[in-house]
Amino acid sequence: MRKPSLDDLNIFIVAANQRSLTAAAATLKMTIATVSRRISALEATLGVELLYRSTKGLTLTPHGESYYRECEELVLALDQRILDLDQTLHSLSGPLKIMAPVNLGSGPLDAFWRHFIDRYPEIALTIELDNNVVDIRDHQADIALRSGPQKIQP
Image (cartoon, rainbow, N blue to C red; front, side, top):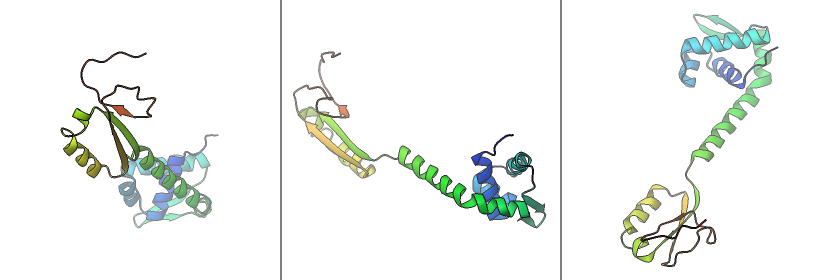
């Protein structure tokens, strides 16, 4: 027997909360046909009708009410955690250490550093200015700006 997908469960929960396929489709940024098809597939997988459909909207069947009570809190909590994780993974934040030679890192790039800090306030920028060429791994730097000929290091 096929197991219900979390995505299909989420569609069912949103549709039940909205009491409308049209509103659920708008909320989920899907077509009405897709929402209807996915809920029908969930019902087929479970072998029960979950929603009564009418021109006045959606209502839960007795099986739908039971399934909704069992799933709603878990599905919405998981959906929120996935959203939070996605935002965390795709947000620009945390420490960033840049090494640069004095003549390049200060003066010519001062406006750039200010703009960067203003644009990305969640990034803790550290700039280490030094004319000595050192391995960025030894200084635990993320980026090293260099000028002039460079020795290739293994």
